[in-house]
Length: 398
Image 1 (cartoon, helix red, strand yellow):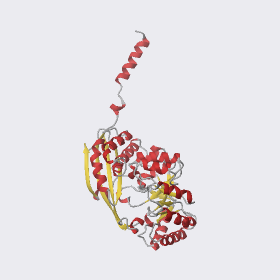
Image 2: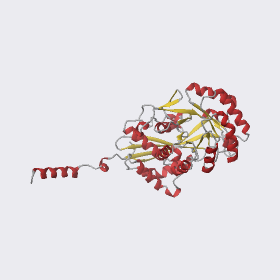
Image 3: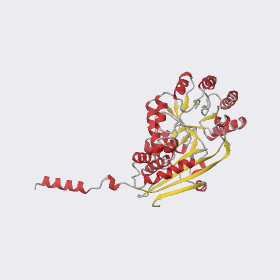
Image 4: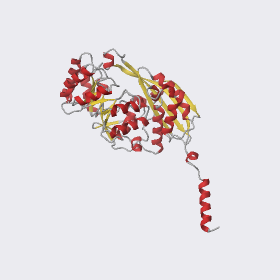
């Protein structure tokens, strides 16, 4: 045998005995699902309450997923529900959780598909994907920790901070004088924009509150309003025209969340940009919104659409069509995703979830700043454990 032939034989032997990716990949060994209820200090009301469609919000249900792997990595994710739904999301998450065991945590899309099919008979939107969201988010958290990077850096950040606005100080249950005080507190804390709730039965009251807040802020400070789906098309166009003088960043959810045609007509008719999308619960629903030219700002919510994986697909489609991004709620997750969006986005600031985590986000100069902590950068607090009412475990505990 020639030297060359012998060398080839050795090379083939080495390839034959090399280990494959399947043999060397990490594996999920343990999964924990928990349901906690976070109480709110004051019952919260928006237009849905004042128009009789809902009761005041008194607590937020949080569904946590904790994932550990054979190689010692861990990830944490969460979903949530306001008012009804938390128990149902937890129940479905519990039913499908064991499908993660034995999977390579790096194969996030594969796992997502597996979880979808595990609950296929209840659909691919709404509660079905909201139950997948904690697992998907935990896997992305884990993946970034494995890479020793903040999630935004793993995705590829366009910026290290995101302009943010506050919503929690402008709810309709709050008297106007307190709203004005909240506005001042928010500005002093480093907030870059203010959003107040509108959509009351008496639209004159909306305009009164809006006039007072604009006066307090001055002409140039970013100001948004949110009607929480309470107007019909005729009311929205009439009030929208009256609000043009306030130079708003956007009017949010003026119509029913699924009225794509109505939102598109409103976006065309008004100078003020339209924002919507927070109530949609799948990529396909956001696809209809984006392709239907129904808003200037898209407002996906990662826990509601099924996690980070579908959120990234929404981001990609929105960017291709030149839409601006303003994710809803859950700033602990959305900071990373907004930082990775190519067009300058807005981030919604809610302090409600702060007690759940040991770490807090930095607010400065009108922007929320990425920390250097790996993954999402959060660990569960003892308070979160105390608020937990149900939990279940699968696999071998580390």
